[in-house]
Length: 117
Image 1 (cartoon, rainbow, N blue to C red):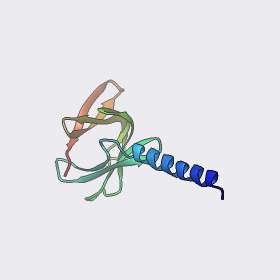
Image 2 (image 1 turned 90 degrees about the vertical axis):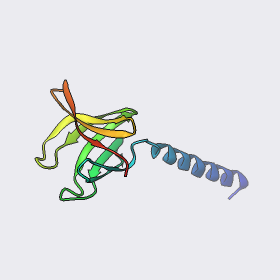
Image 3 (image 1 turned 30 degrees about the horizontal axis):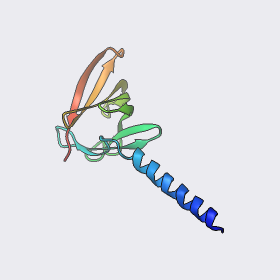
Image 4 (image 1 turned 180 degrees about the vertical axis):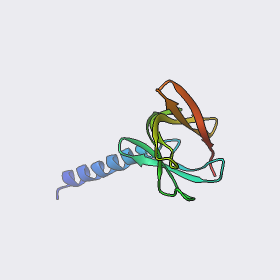
């Protein structure tokens, strides 16, 4: 491999590493705790972010699939008790994360508020 090819390979690796870091930089990524003590994990999935339950009887179930940028992430939210899903999203507000559900895309309300552990 020539010096030119080696340099190009190193640059490609650096650019790929930088892009991956930028994708992981969402301010809502990571661990959250609901008001009842249930732990929730928010992580990248597909073209957006997914929130899933990390503790308790509904562990492993998805509660949100959203996309957007701070403070508002819109998409679908899911009630793990009933299995029903709704339009809604996550909203970052004062260091807390609100899980919001909507009926007819007009009547929206905060269903839960999460905070960092």
